[in-house]
Image (cartoon, rainbow over all chains, first blue to last red; front, side, top):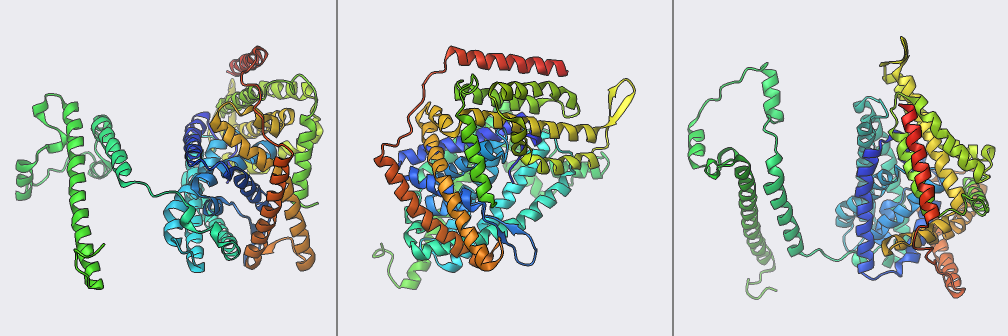
Length: 337
Length: 253
């Protein structure tokens, strides 16, 4: 999946590279914050192991072809996501400068496609929830397979997107996408099998290496709420003003299908109720004088209302869940801790 | 020769070439790195339908190869290694891009063919520049110079250690592969044995790497930071080449 410089434009490479290096800087910050620089030799060893492991080919049964380890998910399972990401960055840089495997300008894209999805998405969103705190063989196999397949699918999709946005390759987008996703489906399966085999073996010899206890600390709920609140205000209050006034996809399709003729909407009794009760009809309020300000205000108010509604739903759900648990245990609410 | 032995050979060759004492070798690694990145950005920003605009950029590689005394014929094999992949993608352009481009008064050529040649040239020039950079710098010297701040220093430390361990791992994996092929008669390991082969490989190299790391520390190994500031001579080096690239770019318009 290593991308070459020749297929990328400097703009696409620069944009994706900035994102990839940003994640790299965050990962280093996180590792340094945990003051665990003793991990450097281990990361070096693991990086070299994956590098050398990539040169061992495995026969794919029934196809006559062979595959090899990519290693992103395996590194994440053994080291943690941030450490794995940095190790993968180092591997890809050495491959790039020593073996011309992937270009220097495409380095950021390669890091993003091969390391980011496997180390963060594959590991944090799929592998870890499936494997849990007590890894079993079945869980490791399921986690590795699903995580590897989905990470590689996302990586392949990104390759297609970056290549098409760069405009160097003139391949038909749909054919290119289909071919890439299909070939990486089989590669992902092989990668998943190899990763699970290695993890099971290491787990049986040194179980402490893949126990999830050493992984990153739980993110505080407060932090998440504050971050999402800032993003919401920024998007709702700032970016909403840039929203296009043109018709959305469905409206556009209907308009095209009806060859430009606007179909008059039939006003029902429900529409009357909505018109009379809507606080901010069509995301605007004439009382503000300025349409932009009205849109921004509507964005923030709408986000707050949705947030409060979801919070109330969560509280109700939590209360309901508590009741169910208590029914099972047979304990009263007050005595339960 | 196994793939691992070929990789070890390539690393040794790069190390041998980076040990020379020429003007290019003595230039600051950061300056060379910056020039290489700018060069690659320049060649990839040239119009895809104007491959002739890439030809002046060949001079940069010729200059560096001559000044750094890099053997061109020996290096060609390493530079052409990525060509099969680029050829496959480039051929897609020949098939799917049916546009007609006027290259001279009334002379039309297939746009697919022009973009195909452009992609090939871009790939060749970019890899040659990168090869020249590493052959005149070496991985350790580059890592030492990356200690401009704590973040990059951390990253450089990992690369330096990884690079040191790579030879060890490659030798170990080569031995494993030889043993496996002698016993099974095939170079490809079956999926059933993947876990035990790679797992055992990991356990062995982890133990060995631990011993090597302790030995390195006992002998006083530490990656020292290189000079913290870029010298005036190196700034001139960057400026000279950037101006040269601008000229090449203007010539191609």
